[in-house]
Length: 218
Image (cartoon, rainbow, N blue to C red):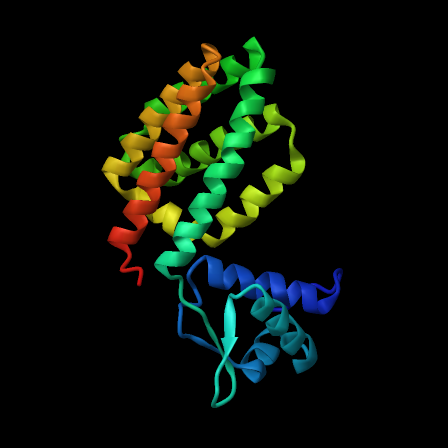
């Protein structure tokens, strides 16, 4: 793999390593050895070292007493905290959506749900279902027009990406997510803020519980 040099090198390396951690290629406990990645990316060790420091500040890697760094694990307390923040931020988004959503916006959501329904039970279309669920959220973010809140949510979701993807693979979770999305759209149509927040909180708490129960989170 040869890294493109259009960005500052440490930032490119940081992006590459972060993606490897998030998509599960680098698992908790795996060591990141500077010389290995310098050879892999065909660059010097300096930007590797700088990128690792950036990852350490984010809590994605940690230095070991015997030297070197390893990928950190995700603990139950981390997931609890992430979901508490997501619930709070998505409450802000939904309140704005109910204030701002037009008939065209609602139609976009309805059309998206029809597309999702048509492939929901097709085992060969799991990736497409996941993309449509992500698009559902993106449409809500577009309606809300709260860019800073949206960026905070997306940053949180990066850390949960591999777990959220696995949860969609579960037939029961996939169906529950579909029904929750339908119910949220209904609440948006009826301008029922209380119901929308209630459904979304239930949706996120069930997602959190599924992750903790099925991925051996400590």
